[in-house]
Image (cartoon, rainbow, N blue to C red; front, side):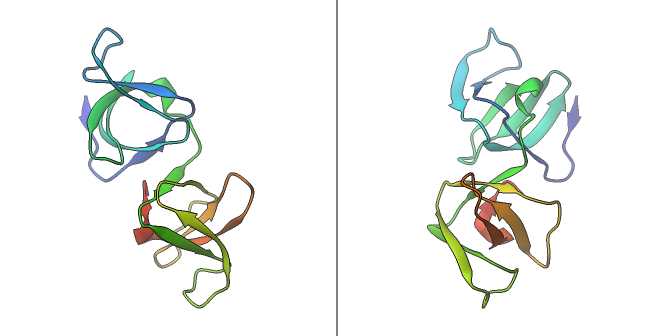
Length: 132
């Protein structure tokens, strides 16, 4: 069993059950929707202890964490811009709780390149996202 030393997030690839112990015989804590980013707390092989966006700790089967890298909007409204600049044009607005896929692995001076499920893409301030 290895603790996660730096913040690491993984997203669910499908709807997944979260348990109070690393076993399908354990109590079910909640259901994580497809694409939900979860913070990895402990990686224990077939099971991973995670923290959900509400701060709740639970266990999930590793096989459920194979989704695209997503973040969740954690502010009331995030303005997604054409470029990673505060004065760039707004492409779309994303409300609290909306899932956005990180479209590439880069953080340009505090900005995340994101894509909405409907295809719209742009940049959001990293501090407005949970799961990065």
